[in-house]
Length: 200
Length: 240
Image (tube, rainbow over all chains, first blue to last red; front, side):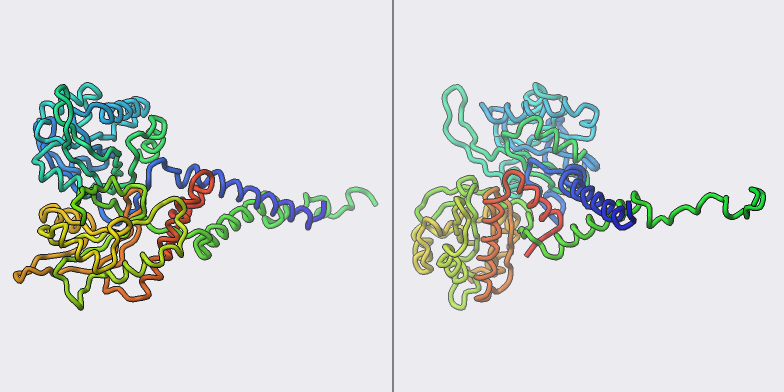
């Protein structure tokens, strides 16, 4: 085999390797393809400083070097909240030890009924480590607004009492305190695990 | 000639070929060169452009010019251009409503596929009634459907416009408002994709229209395998 031919073959092999790296390896390992919408914010996530289901007050700064999943819901929620919290619980179980650095937070959009004790009891059904947060309606409205969450009370039935219509999506804050991902409320367990695994 | 007569150097092993002649080394160099050139090509020539995903747009419930409640969830799935004003804003009013009108008039020049484009002007003045909003809307040519005017109570407006849209406004003693003119572009997922924050010029119409076009192209094409290319464009910050 002549030197020229050998060089050309080697160059072709290099180009093939680069193509594989570019289209297969790079997207897979370097820039994970997230299910959630990636936010490229230059500023840290807006703080959430509210009373918690443990009885103390907490803010996002207390979860330094942890990945935080924030969800806005309420304990009387008949459908979407239990489904989403159940998905989160399954994702946590699937993540195993990696979930040690994960904190799930549910901010109540029904502060009139959701006391810290009720939040603790409700979230305990899913996972005792899930943290509930609540406060005055104004405080919660301020937090919800900057997280793109709308909520409003609407009539329910005699059994349910009033209902609260609200935006159902998951906000994922990375270890550095930046809002990294926004995921739809109906995200699957596998999609959630895949994105969280990458961030953890 | 006997074997012992052979010079020592002629029976030594041949010298190793230089590194440049080794196929594995050449493959590695070619690989590196192609990857670097590919990344540079993507970054320099930006075959795909995207708008940055800046932050979440605020969640809200507003009262529009017809007196109806409009929430941020109602606008999900639409590309929305927001601007801010107040009903007492008189000429020369710094609010970029004329720019908004010009963009609305030319919106058919851009292709957003099935994604509708809406225009929302928020009044800083929480005391504006639907009738006042309607007067202002009619003066600016807003039809109440594709482009509508709305407001909310003042405490909520501070959170929506100030904290959410990061736009300064303040009520003055004479009842009018000091404010920074701004146009904010939000995608169908409720993410801020463009901010235009100075006294707008006529050319801003072209710029914002081109940005809406880029957004429309991303919405139309970023599903399936093509989504990878769009994520790469975000990764390499291929912004206009």
